[in-house]
Structure formats: C-alpha cells, structure tokens
Length: 232
Image (cartoon, rainbow, N blue to C red; front, top):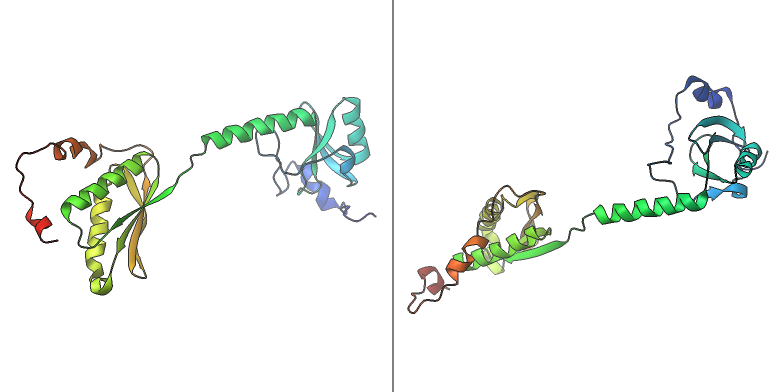
C-alpha cells in the first residue's frame, strides 16, 4: 500500500452510513477553503469523499472514479478538506473557485478594521490645562478608531507616589467613557504606569473636552494666569 493511504475500517465508513460527519471540518461553499488546494492528478490518495458540481454528496469513491466523473463533466476534482478521513473532494471549476474565493478574501479584508495603538503620555503632577489638552488629543484618536495607551511617566522619587498616577488614569478612563472602554486596567511596568482604552463601536455620548475648545481659544485683552500654572 503506498505511503499516505488510509486503512479503511468499519469505523472509517461507519460515520458515513450513520450520517454523522467526522470531526474534521469541510471547507467549501461559503466557508473558507483550505490552502494550498490539490487538484486532479495531484490527489494521490486511493479514495476520497466526493461532492459533485451540484453539491450532492456521492459518498466515498476510488479517486480514479472521482477523477473520471470530474473529467466527464469538464470540471476539476478539488481536494477541499485534506484533513478529513478520508479527504473531501469537490467536483468544480477550479479557476472559478479560486476567483470566487479571491473575491471573498478581498471583501473580508475591506470589512476588517485596522486598529492602531497610539500613546498619550502624562506626568503624575500634570496641570489642569495640560491634562485637558491631552484629553482632547485622546478623544480625537479614539474618534478616528485608534486604541489609546495612556502612560504616566514617573521620574526620580515620583515613583513612590504611584497612587497619584492611578487616580489620574482612573480620571482619564472616566472622562473617555462616552468614547471608549478600558481594555487593559492600569498596571505598573518599571517607571511607567499605563492602561489601554479601546474605542466604542458606537459612542454613548459627545466627547467631554473637544466641545469646549472654541471657548478656550477666545482671545482676551487681559488674562490672569491661573494659580495652578504659576506653581510650575
């Protein structure tokens, strides 16, 4: 018996007579087809389970008979599930099958949303104005569909006050609630503490800070500097 040929026992055929499919999935029709595909004379196994061009199951046939049926119909014998016992082959137009699968793959790629991870860095003692600037940046990135890694950078002895960083990350998470969910809870790595925010598929409300930008940018003839900025 050539290498690779299965030994057909009562168990092998039993599942077919009982109507119970084997554990290995079949990949044809609307499902993803296994790759690379072997066709016609490339199929060297002695017997295969055959599905004809109309989708009807013909049962387990000698590969030579299955190939003869395909040639008689002017089509190809295509191995669509090589891991099944025995392998599953479909009688079809291989060129058309490849074309249809290529279209499905292309449509799938179009539907896939490429999500980038962008980083917003904060200091544990960041001023209110600077925090709001960073928050607006985070809102823009989330609205563009990007994930946000919010990082608190500790310097020197600031690392002993990680509770400040945690409160700041919690504040950012709460402020971004209409636009994002917390994908990864705050954690400390080295001298940085970070969390990851993922954009919501559908925002639950308007951004908190972006809507106030025009008010903040209004010119003023005389403007006092907030006390929090004078302490920098």
